[in-house]
Image (cartoon, rainbow, N blue to C red; front, side, top):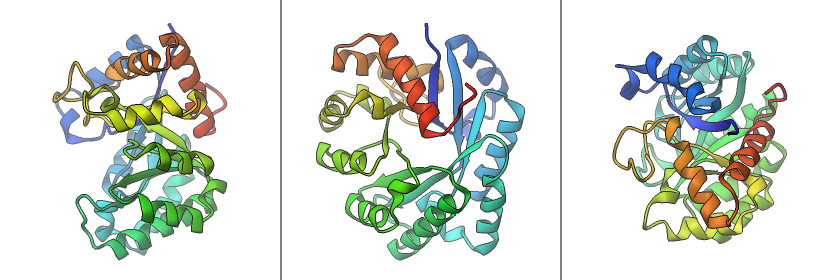
Length: 259
């Protein structure tokens, strides 16, 4: 059995407060070889730094999710710059636009999205992009900022095959999670069938978006097997092939050479 790369988790989330240490302690037994814990606010980025220091197979991303950008200011950006330079911090994220919740106002989201893209370029780290119901503006900003030179992943990809092609053309990876196992995920299935395996990475976004057969429950990296199995079925290849390829993709995305 190959090792699985969890490219997007939130183990600092309060949903894990009761059993965080025990659960993380079981991940290696479930063939989880690497985890990237992703910041979504200043406080969660700080908690991510602690997790990375605590667990040798954890890596981190620091950034502020679009829905949290009302809190951002220059002191927060200074913290993110320092945090991004710390050991085993491998990305700036999650950053982007969220028009589903649509708060704070879109101009604030866009301003801090651009600022965090500029930070990623400065510290030479890839970006983790959160984009929900905001495909047009996300792509416009990524193109204007020449984000293809920065590199990164569109996390929890939720758009059409046409938008996926544009993201792939920019050089981005597509983060595929539990939604691929949902019966109503027709659009995402089209994306996964069309996208080359070498541009797909596995993620849970745990504690959110648990795949079938655990839909609705608290998610964890243990559920990555169901995502890999579904991709293998859809692409008519072996589970082992999906796991091996996506592990290499995770290493390339986050520029981790010593795994």
